[in-house]
Image 1: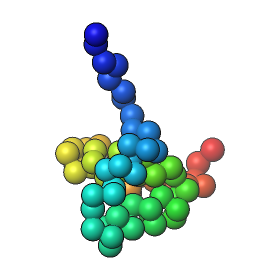
Image 2: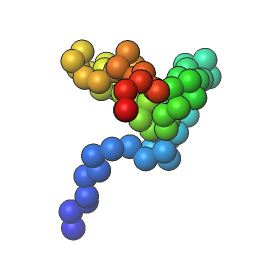
Image 3: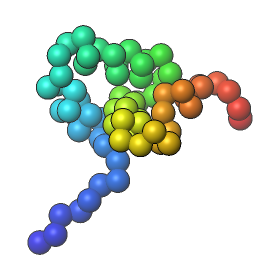
Length: 68
């Protein structure tokens, strides 16, 4: 039986990843998520993507409330 590959993290996946980090590092993504009003799973995805690919969508690209 083949497993289905997911294209994005769930909130539970993001929290499972973050629970292994030291508290001060774990707090930063939650603070950023609250600041930009994005779900924690999106913030974790952006952090991983920007680490792996400098051209990926990153935190500097997130400007809530701009555009429409």
